Image (cartoon, rainbow, N blue to C red; front, top):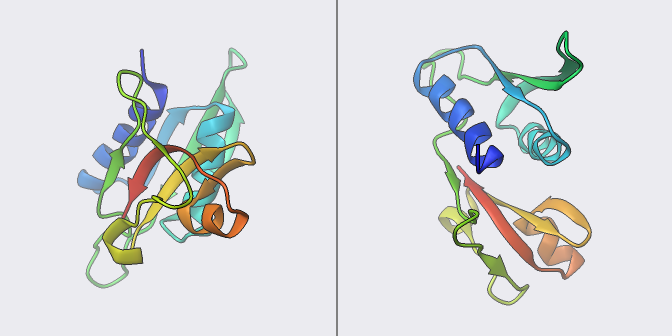
Length: 132
């Protein structure tokens, strides 16, 4: 697998389209940080970091749906920076997702954070993905 973050986002995207309640994905530190941001921003219901029988990390994510309409909180997940074409952004040209309705997740020198927090911290970095 050449891009594990894209695989992680695709697993979530496919689970949302299939109306699954829980999705499992292989874990890593960067995926755990992305999961924490999705939880803090209200895109997922809950998450759990576990290990399988071989000792490899696994992330279990409970997806969030509207109680009456059964519409997912995640409309779209899009990978921006990829191994073949890295996308970096400074503070001045920080992307705005749907005029502030969505979030961009960045990898900065101060850790993984949203575009809003990166503006507050006055740091730029690699734009990992857009969520809305």
